[in-house]
Amino acid sequence: MKLSQRQLLKAAACLMLLTTVFHTVGNLTPSSDATVIEFEKIARGLNIDAGLGMRPNMFDIHMVLVFVMSLTFSGLGILNLVLASASDVSDRLIRPIVAINAAWVGGFIVLCWFYRIPPPLISGILIGIPLALALATRGAE
Image (cartoon, rainbow, N blue to C red; front, side, top):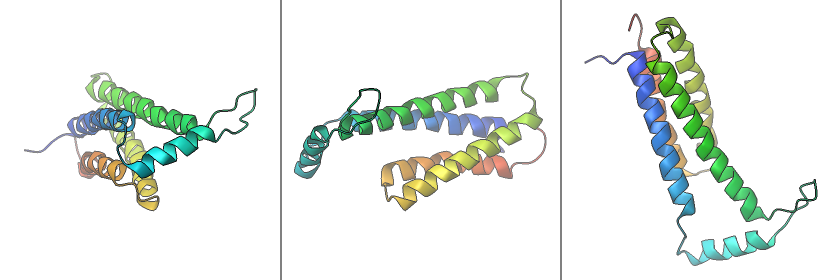
């Protein structure tokens, strides 16, 4: 069974949404690791001057980045589902949409590899598989 670019983009989008759930839950689940608990305690006590009279601590900065990733993956996953499902989006336009997604997911994979963070690396690779397959797919849907 050959899957179309649209179907593969939908699969990647669903994996983006699943990544959002795992990422958010994983970062909101308290750790029982003593080293992580101590690190969080230190991070909560380290405030920086961020301007505008704001002095967030490093843990707050970390949590903003956690939620930014969750929101970004959610937004891109939903946007991709809408585009892949829209009959008025031409098959010809789906290919560059897939290519743009493959580019940002590829960058995400490289960053996760470089910084040695396995959970998002694995998620990125799983999202990248249907995108790579979609890029390899030619012809009409």
